[in-house]
Length: 94
Image (cartoon, rainbow, N blue to C red; front, side):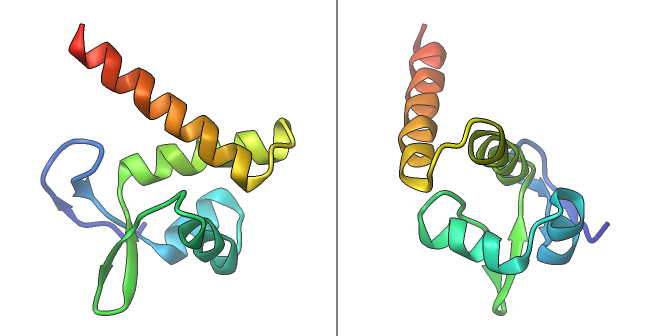
C-alpha cells in the first residue's frame, strides 16, 4: 500500500494514497471526491494529491455500510456521522 508512517493515532501516522483506498474499498476516485464534497471525508491534500488517514478509512467504512447495507442517502449519512462524533465527544468527557 502507499503509506507514510510518520506519527501515531487515527488522524496521524499512516497516510493512504487515493489509489490504495480505491482498491481496498472497491470504489471509484469520483466516489471519494463526492464524499469529500458532501463533507463526509476530509483527506489531507499535499501537492494536489489526496491522502487518507486511518481515521478517514474508518469513517469511509462506516459511510459504505450506511449507504450500501442500510440504504441511507448522503444527507442521512452526514447526520449519523455527526451523531457518532457527538457520542464520542461525550464519552471522552465522562
